[in-house]
Image 1 (cartoon, rainbow, N blue to C red):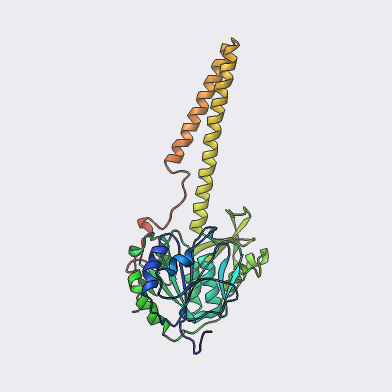
Image 2 (cartoon, rainbow, N blue to C red):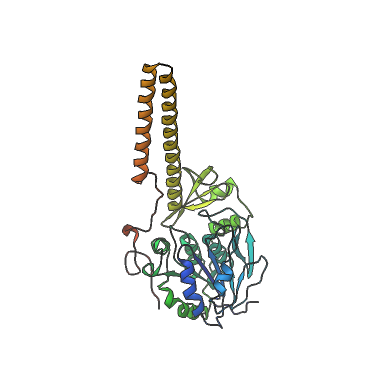
Length: 354
């Protein structure tokens, strides 16, 4: 069991693409006597051997998270597929709540629940990944008295997630992974910061992830109805203004950062364009087959018209192909371009208190 007086003894870590490489560098260099419990969520598929993979190089014991487990210092708990990894007081809670940014387990769900439950004892660490996952969770940790750490974008395999965190969250430390073990060991021995009253919206979203509530009245408390539809269930989305960050949540509970909605819309456009291209190609093939049939029956005028129509369908299919090739149907990839590049000394919110 965890001990009092409280220190910053809860470290929650999130990442996506490129984060396994970061963890393989981070975990072996953490001190064996680290006075903190670590909880890790990466975006995983339906099956995962992540705990076994991480334990190969970790100095601390690594285990797959199990609901009801009491946290212990010096141990690493890894999220498992299909359920959110959450915290309730000093115990692990696994729940099949609505997906966030198409992920379950989700980074924001873990960060938010830790912030709501343990406040100033929490250290949030965001590693490599794409889009804006983790930014809302870091904001929740900071608002509840915790400390936030982000991998230096220049050090990340995929820098979008760290860059977006610097744009949207009040980040305390920006570090390459090589410098994180010493920083986390230092922070974990500090007295816990004050834990202010948990804002209502953080409590509500934590409860949604834990399947404790999800209805339209809650949505109305979180934000206002938007003209957009949920990429998962196609229901109405509510718009949430989270400081400088624009987010959405539907009445089922699916949650998205704005760039995740944009990316999903791009994928839907690409799917529709692919379907349209295939339909035009099939119509062209059918019209040519009909033309052959009519020509064999000596109906040359009708055959000519059908062949002309087939050519029009083929021209349309090529036009759609060009649209797809030129990126009109492509997924959005915000955060990877130079316009979103906010380095730790640049236009972002990152600070360095060390």
